[in-house]
Length: 260
Image 1: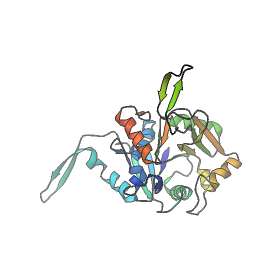
Image 2 (image 1 turned 30 degrees about the vertical axis):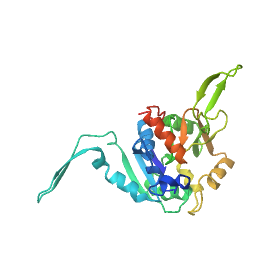
Image 3 (image 1 turned 45 degrees about the vertical axis):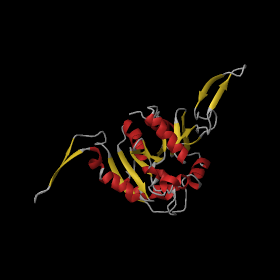
Image 4 (image 1 turned 60 degrees about the vertical axis):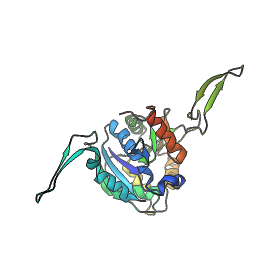
């Protein structure tokens, strides 16, 4: 399946970083969070990506245009007949990346609508945001979608708590400390969606419409919305604190989303 990733938003809650770069290019362990998201999909066999560009999209274009320069040793011949040779290989050689301009100020529904021309008209596709990581099973979500037979399946996740969790015994002794635990009961939309082509019937030709509002509300009302429950790790990157937390997990070798 093709993978559509929303990469065009301005990320205003992370302005410390997004003033200088698009949110999907904020680094986690020295590599853009977008790269981490793509690695999650690729580890499940999905290598064909469509990136919905908008705010500072030229930086994402430059990153992939220069990918070989940044991942391989290079030999240059500087004579009258210049030659260029890249040495070695990298794990992303199977990736196919379509960089699609979807508007500077477009909302999410319109961005998805804009890339319809790059999708196979009779095949479902995968869709997610450019700022969330998790250790979910992409192919299990696809199987859940097929079994439900509905237009859209979104991944329901437990949001991360803002504070550490303490387990205290009756005598007041601290038995366990868990940093930023997943909330036990509540579910939120974690992205990582599976979509039928019929989704485009719900996306108006209006750049001001958000996918998460009228389209998803209508799908739910018509019983065309399905959920795949993910009980494991999931973490968005909406704030500088969350970006720092993801970087700390990576640097400590405790990144649950690293399933490749």
